[in-house]
Length: 83
Image 1 (cartoon, helix red, strand yellow):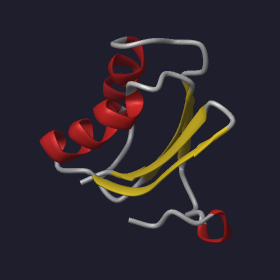
Image 2 (image 1 turned 180 degrees about the vertical axis):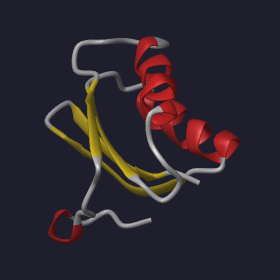
Image 3 (image 1 turned 90 degrees about the horizontal axis):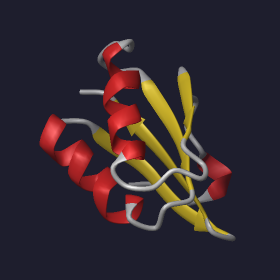
């Protein structure tokens, strides 16, 4: 998993879950990936600290690859390659 701002991956879709709390960010991610294809990369922005636990579990359970996970000033940034 890449964790450096210098090498952020390109992405095909973005999901902003700022201000939402569990379980809403994960529910919205489920809906968003339905419209995407395997190999596409989804960028997710969140403010819920629970996403640091929930997003990796989401990826592991559904066979997606968590390319990057970062936190800065209360904002969490994820890049997920769909499996």
